[in-house]
Length: 363
Ligand SMILES: Nc1ncnc2c1ncn2[C@@H]1O[C@H](COP(=O)(O)OP(=O)(O)OP(=O)(O)O)[C@@H](O)[C@H]1O
Ligand SMILES: [Mg+2]
Image (cartoon, rainbow, N blue to C red; front, side, top):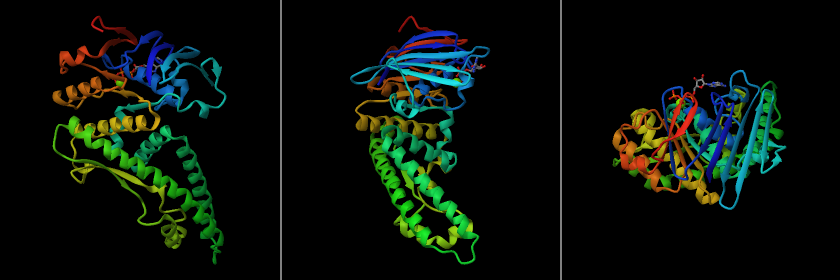
């Protein structure tokens, strides 16, 4: 999947901006506050029809009434024409000349994998962040996963409501709890199976990507840490007393976690900032491969401020890797002083200044 042309009108700090991307590596260089992240956010918007960090109203340029994103994105057999108009209380998406009525019909058309500075929380942050990461990736590949996930959430809510009610009764009748537990277990086992399959694939991809980028002999494995050991239904049933006491469902996929393991030790306890960054980047590149195998199209890769904390060798290895790959990558950086000229020669370079973007002479 490749984005060709992008026109921004009154988006964030941009007034009127046209950009023509290359099919390979696109490097946007500019000072702090110049509009680099805002540009990536506009591309990210194309995937989920929302920003990852704010409400739609904040995307409209200060003191303006609406903003517009116009773009063409090449899929393997078709070029999508997308027009998005954001006004204060309304979002309009026009895909190939037809207005989208239900957002869920649009989501999934443009696949994007992104590395944002916030993603550094993935290793050290709370399990909720890692679950969000996994859910959004598997969901992007397979809509059925999202359907199963919302079914699981419904069963969970139903069971939790019942548990609260039963916990207040002197002699609770467990018949209905048995039924709700069996339903929850059935829905949960499906989620666990999707996640296990994804993690097995992820580790297969990491075996080649990680050693190259990390430039070391450590091993890196992404580990699933399910909240249960054994069959979900039996564990849920064994925990009736506990669940009634704490008035909620104490185990199941909603409590799963994952770990980034370096040489069999959880990276959150030992990896340096740069090492963590390489682990996250390798994971995202692995994800692009998995999406490719599944959808036969590579997602667009967005890398925001990716070079900070990486040493010169690893910065060059990363760009070299991306130049060789079939991925369209959009990278932002404040400086390219550490990057080799021959590596830069293969990329399309843009300068960003006060929300104004200019393609470089050497493009
Ligand atoms: N709705 C808006 N209208 C006008 N300007 C905005 C709007 N939203 C954000 N900005 C401006 O955009 C700027 C931030 O841009 P951005 O985050 O893209 O910078 P950046 O180039 O990524 O910087 P850094 O290198 O520090 O990450 C801020 O100065 C902010 O005032
Ligand atoms: Mg930024």
